[in-house]
Amino acid sequence: PYQDIPFVRELRKMHNEAFHSDNTKHGGNTNKSGKRVSDEDVKWLEWNDYLKVVESLKVDVYHSIQRYNDFKDKNAPFTSKTATHKDVQKKKHVAICYQKYLLLAFFSCIPDRQRTFRELSLNGQTFVKNEKSNCFVIQHGPSDYKTGKTYGHRPPLVLSEDLTPWIEEFITTYRPCLLKDGMTTTTTTLFVQPNTGKAHTANSIYNIVTRCCFEKSGKKTNPHLLRDMIVTHVRGGGGGGVGGDGTSHSASEQELEALALYMGHSLSMQRDSYDRRTMTQKVAPAVELLQSVNQKRKNG
Image (cartoon, rainbow, N blue to C red):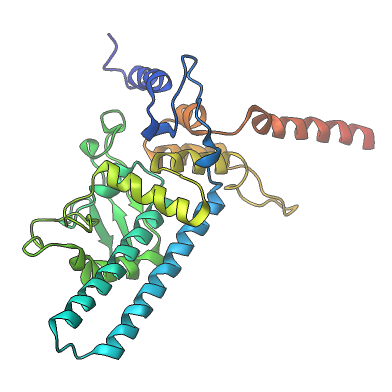
């Protein structure tokens, strides 16, 4: 009963997720009380540290391109099958590095579920370039994301303009290196598996993110944990503005509501399911507020 009421559907979904979460979603098992029982120290990254991982992957792309160009300068023109094969393999290595960087950079711009990125298609429907803003955007209808039946069409999910030339070069120059012969027109997803040329699976996206984060930071961060990380970051003061005193402040209620809408869930779910701050961290602003009030009374 009441299944036609969006709030009731959302409430029931939150209840189910609290008691039946799996490792892929929460990065750990839960007990009967809904508390996470795995040690997340091996998985959790502060958001700024994740951004450092992304930047490091970007540097890897630069280095792989430089090595490839050095190889071409030294060996071109290719007069043997062996040299031609090596050229193909080295360019494919650049493509693999490129894809890793773009995938994790996409997560940093749009902390969404991994399905969003593995299903991006070059057919002009879900992934398009806004010529006016010079940004690529992701467009989702109700059937394109998990909570679509509740929230309907999503607002455009915007990728940073800084990524535009990278995306365009990947599509035109390096993505074809990851496709098998004859798959250029049959595989339309932006990201493809290097070994098969086919679209990524949930497991392959999970593995790329986890391995990249582990190689760069020593943390086995998984895709869904990224959503928890950004919410915890902005709610903990890392994503708010800077006040007149030069100190950072937590994001406003309006900003948090906008982020929840952008991520395709409710503000209550953002607060209850994704915010990983400890109770001490959550009440710290109240402690500071009371101390400030008392200090003002003393000074007055």
